Figure (cartoon, rainbow, N blue to C red):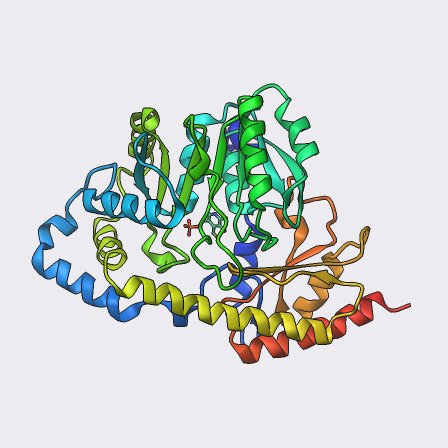
Length: 396
Ligand SMILES: Cc1ncc(COP(=O)(O)O)c(C=O)c1O
């Protein structure tokens, strides 16, 4: 039959990254393409032990429907954790447990994006969330990223537009750029949002994975008027297969978010919410985060050092202080797509910067590399292949 799809699906696009990931399993392939955490970082023993224990103690409750707002002890332990680590106050805020950070974006769009409404995003930004905003009929407006966060002058012009649904940003160890928005810019963004009455959607799945430099306070910790919706996830700090994330927002929004969740998937996995609570409240959690950071520090430095040695000097890149990504930039005006395609022929997966822009059909001079998933040997071998390619492409 000829399907008459809803108007809101007209702008919806698939993720090129998920397509590339299918290739990653092919023999001999080195993948810098995905955004997956290192499997060797997974707290397998702790998760197995707590899942077994909980299933033994409360089998029926674990297999029964749960409540939409999430497992109450996990909501409480998250409040304590986020107050301590991110300085977020829960006097006026609430937390809802959702099925990963992706659902945080989906439900925020469900609540706030009208058909044709403008969603302002960093340029580049995370393709998964941009696709969620598009699927509710949102029109994306990108504001160029600089190493210390978005260009504030351009942001102000964007904020002055009518019908802005919200400004979506990933201020810490951004996906894809790896950049962290400075404290000054975070304050300025919050002030501008007040001036133009814009809602902020702060996404922070990588914040705990800092392996260098000083912690920068979240915008949510500066929020005095309920203007910031804050998303977090256990995908990168525990394991993405658990599908547990969380959203923090002013308590006036609680019922609306709860209803949005009920209409989507009723509630998140009961068993895994219990597992997350057990792990988050155990002394093993802090040790696990420290070990993950140490692992990513090593991998990130190795990738950076190898790139310094092997890449053509005209290719720009900075040294990440946390997270999972490293972006490289060819000289302005270069289309990085032929590089990505040729790298793929040589069995190295990278992602073109165009995948992270509001118009993926426009060329980009950027390429995203992930350093968490590949082994150290793969990082060395893969960067050498990419390095040769940079010299071939930029010669003459
Ligand atoms: C910035 C950002 N937000 C959200 C997500 C979604 O993650 P998850 O749904 O696994 O929590 C990702 C995943 O890579 C991400 O990079």
